[in-house]
Image: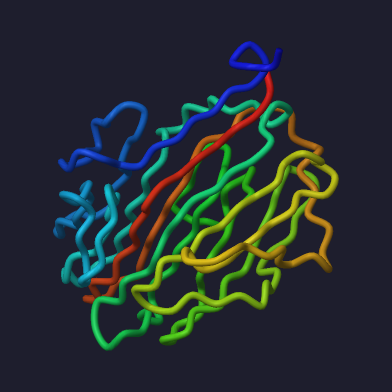
Amino acid sequence: MAGMQDFWEFSDDFLGGGTITTVGLDPWVITDTSSAGTPLYTRLDHGESAGVFRPGVARLVFDSQAEAQNVCLSWGDKLAFDINSVRGYECGVRFVAGTGGAKDTTTTVAWGLTGDRNDAIDSIAIASIFRLASASAVLPVVIENDDGTNTNDDVATGFSMVDTTWCKFKIDFSNLDDVKYYAGLATGGMARVGAATTMKMSAYSAGLQPFFQIQKTSDTNVDGFEIDYVRVWGVR
């Protein structure tokens, strides 16, 4: 019979509250590039934020210091998920604008599975990610991949996030020559997005880590990004 001897799964619902630190909350580590400011990174007590409750939420938020800030929740480059055994990634996330219900023009957000992280998202050598780049109350989601040989940047998905609305995202790694991306509202199903572009990850053969990053160039905005849950699974 199939069981743990054949399959593995990692999941985190970020339950329990408490601060996540740059030292780490195993296996998670925060990377914080701020110098004068103090961005917030924490697990919310029973997940309350902007009037919406979840049973555990990791929250990453800029402070108002006028400086470039990069806040990343990852495994600190512990690349535990061998790409040839990974079969899927799923998460629930939302963007929370600091003011006015719209993402600031200086803010960029990305999430998914990557190799070693980099402050500059486009400089991450290995990545299979979703990304927000445009600034508006309606936030178009794009997808990107890079396996060291095959690269696709800013592939349109036709799916948009709205400020404070929970959404869910999935990546299917069952065929590394055609990695598939899915998106949908947290209250409904998911549909495949970006299907017109073949997203290959087959030139890479090492490990991956979960990755959630929000960054701004020098600016006073206090935009935030919240993670309800993350799940990664595969075969042994």
